[in-house]
Length: 140
Image (spheres, rainbow, N blue to C red):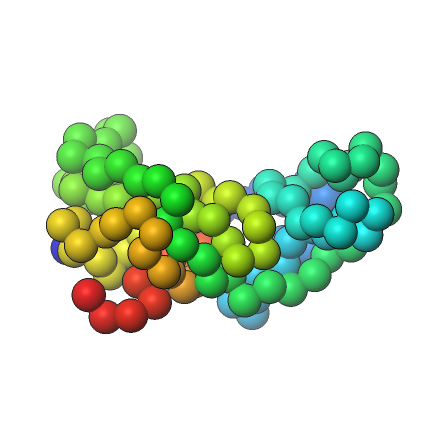
């Protein structure tokens, strides 16, 4: 079973257009950029809308629930992850419509499935922010 990570993760270095995202993680909130003209969210944060090229993006809170779109089981990770294998890397499609590359934790390796409903799991980082990962919405 892949559990909460015990890794010493690097701290984020927010840029002016990513700072609202990282600030919200301090309170375990997920905010995404929203383009009011196209009425669509985007992730990862950028200075302009990927839909219109405009700079009039808004930050809106979403609940972070979604489903596993794709996944891989990593059995031999890079040096920093050695000893933590196997672990799950997934692309999660949020209900808000964006894809999010992440880890899935608290899930047995043989239980993950495409379409599995997941919810946010916030791993604390040393600077007070949190790293968004996901865990199954229902017990597995």
